Image 1 (tube, one colour):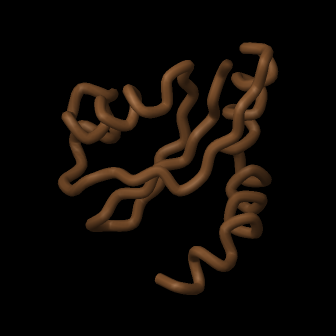
Image 2 (spheres, rainbow, N blue to C red):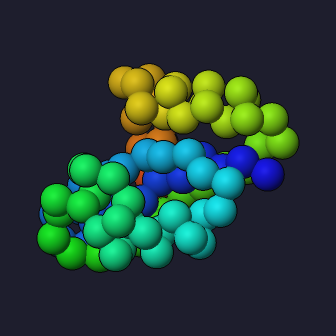
Length: 87
């Protein structure tokens, strides 16, 4: 299984979109500052706020690319409208 995920920083509320085969491990890596330059430089914890799963790696990578685009960001904001209005 392949996952595309969206995590949010607890301090500045910034988002990071990524791809993995083990979402729990990857979230632990982000919070341990092992997971990449962008999330490693940020202070605060990261929490999972959205994920999708795929059977084919190419589908997941294509979706990750889309979600990182302007149209993808608009899609995520629409999908997470209830979550974002509670903050």
